[in-house]
Image (tube, rainbow, N blue to C red; front, side, top):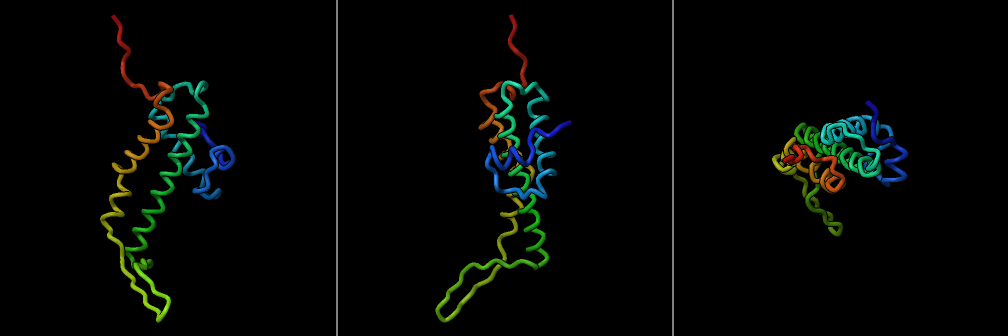
Length: 138
């Protein structure tokens, strides 16, 4: 299956600047799969730009999730410390670790799926591509 987006579309049409080009393909593949599954692989020819924009948005969510998961690993193994306050005159600095439970929540599948679903609704609600019910027939 093909991706709905490429880096040119992401950077020049969607004006995305979150995902670096060298990491883009992986997230484009994953995001395209999520969109394809949600719209049941329907024909997108009438709403191609909407589908592409939704895919770009989902790719950014997935990329940010990966950054947050990486941050959790770095914090738990002690390689990253967070500066909670800093004073320049008579130098003062406080360093602490963030609340891991907050980071775990924002990287949970439930949280990410909710964010992605909101993006599907933002971009695709009016298209009919999200409809998964059975039409009423008398």
